[in-house]
Length: 500
Image 1 (cartoon, rainbow, N blue to C red):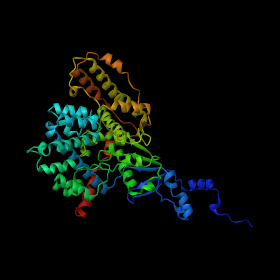
Image 2: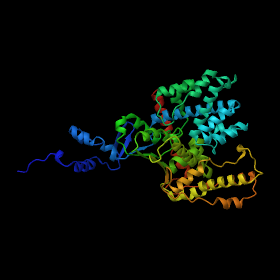
Image 3: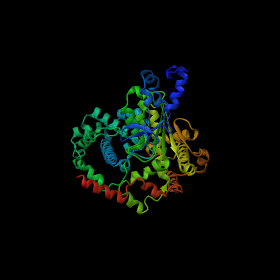
Image 4: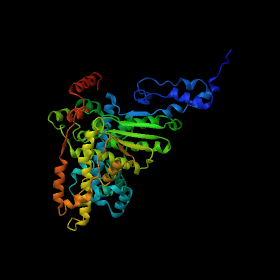
């Protein structure tokens, strides 16, 4: 008679191999946002029954499933989330606009101490602050959220809020003046300045109501009608926001088990999607073994963002008139620049350098991405570096810093160099081009005036790019982010039936 053998009598090393085979799931785990639980990549439920067989096996296996399976998060979309995300995006945009307006009306109160304090904390804000303090014509600044050659949009927003707080601490309420923004009294404006919400947080209804109350927008109480009516944009929750939501929902102990996460930004999302990785910093600091791949689709997330941000109302009408028909060179440089600048900001804010990689995903046309990066991104870098060198050598150029031509942000050339060299956190799955010869461009354009530089740059900035199969035409690619007329009509009818 063959004696029975208990599983627990097998050597621990062998048991570990069995555990790994048992718990390994092809494709890893994904988040089912509706249930707020993880599931297998093929959609099936997780089989974790072995853990509950006995206390010893539970102790031996408790950490294994999360340690050996990569968890993938993607952007999230549903009818309900569209309303919440869309309204939240518009509220934060209003908040940003109001803070910019307060800042512009109060800039005369920025003394040398406040200026030095702000620049010390936000060094990349200096060119923007210099220009605004000297120039009167800054309408584009308030409309477009930030100058394209300024710091990362997220850094810009934080910097402006920081300056407003310095003004309040230094001048009290005097810096607001008597004719400030109606319908806000001075104390209400200070409350507005202090109002903040992280863009990567998924807000509750109470949080939205709080922002509405501070912004004094009673008309927004009927926001279901507003967004079920004319706005067709598919407002999505970012993959990073979904990951943060999940990580916050589990215990500190369980988070320590996780080793690999893929945050796949496969579609355009709101609000301010490029900065959402900042919300992952605390988890990477908490768990030194955690590795995050932040993968961002160039074709369906980054490239369309500049177009969508400019035309996020009535998108189908815009496309029918050809507005979406062209992917301009400056759309590429600005949209990629936002993601690279915010990638640099993530490191500055304390992300451990080995914990995260930002991967620009060129699929399904990596070869076309290579051409576009060489013609657009590398050209942007070499023109900026060449102009900077020419400016430093030419005594006839204006000395005032705000008059210096900036085609891109100060950190953009450094970020592109990291991307080419695969250093820092930046990676891509295509050849991002080669760094061009700055000295040759300086010699070629020696003697040019500032106007000549700007004129030639604008000509290059208007170069067009077009998609090819297997991608759809560019305007159809952008329209993937908008509801069709038929879909919109159905949602309006459903809203009426629900009494919204």
